[in-house]
Every structure is written in C-alpha cells, then in structure tokens.
Amino acid sequence: MSRWMSWRGHAWLGLAARLYLGFVFLMACFHKLLHPDVFALDVATYQFLPLWAINGFALVLPWVELLAGIMLVIGFRVRAASLLVALMMVSFVISLLWALHLDLDMSCGCFASQGATQDDPISWRTIVRDGVWLVQALYVLFFDREPLGVERLVNAVRKRRAAQA
Image (cartoon, rainbow, N blue to C red; front, side, top):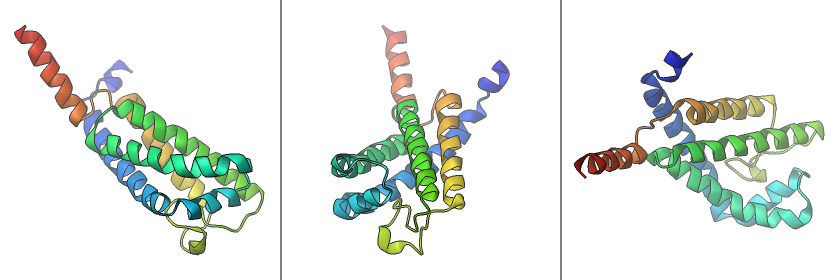
C-alpha cells in the first residue's frame, strides 16, 4: 500500500484531474458571477435551502468555485482546493437527489440558468457526472501529495534557501 501511495505518477494523474476539475469549476462559476439573481432563482427552485439563505448562498458560492478552480489550475494549496471541491460535490449530489426525489423538472443550474432546462436537465446522469468529479477531487486530496504547480515551486525554493543557510 505504501508503494502505491508513494508512486510518482500520482503527480501527473493529479495534474490532469486538477486541470480538468479546475476548468469545470471556472466554467461553472461565470454565469453565476455575471447573473447572481438568475442563479438565486436556480437555487430557490431546488426547494432545499431556507428562503433567508438563498441570496447569500447565490452570492458566495460562485466566488468559492472561482477560488477553488484557480487554485487547482495553478497548483496552489491543492489539498485545500480539492477538499473544497469535494465538499461542494457532495452538497451538489445531495441537492440533485433532493430535486429528483421531489420530481422537479429543471436545469441543474451548474453551467446555465433555468431557461436552459433542455441543455442541462437534472437526471441520474447528472448525479453520476458529479460523482465522477467527486472521485477526482478525492483522488487529488488523498494521492497528489506533491502537486505539480506553484506549490511545488515554492517548496523547492524554500528547501534551497534552507540548504544554503
């Protein structure tokens, strides 16, 4: 097991997963940032959050998605970013299951607004898709111990300076 955990290929598989997830989250946040009112309506349609929490959630979540996406892409604080993504994915899957339980005919609101129900309808496929993204985030969290990117460069510089001192 320790041989598997220390395999050097995790950095490259982790990079691929990080770039993919990072760009997914970057693409997902843009319509929400540009149209927070429309996203708030999408959130309300799930009938999951109390009314008092919807606007705050619709204003904060896109910025969290943006931050996590950027961190994954550049490779900075990768474990924190992958934990954020994993937690978001769990909450998204729970929300989707709730909407399916209520038999709501709606768009997931992930990449477009409710007006695009035919483009991104919620279904079991949506849950599987989000589940795959959750597995990718968990892979990065648990196996990408020395991520390629800014964090690795910063650590290398620190090690060099410590060796010179």
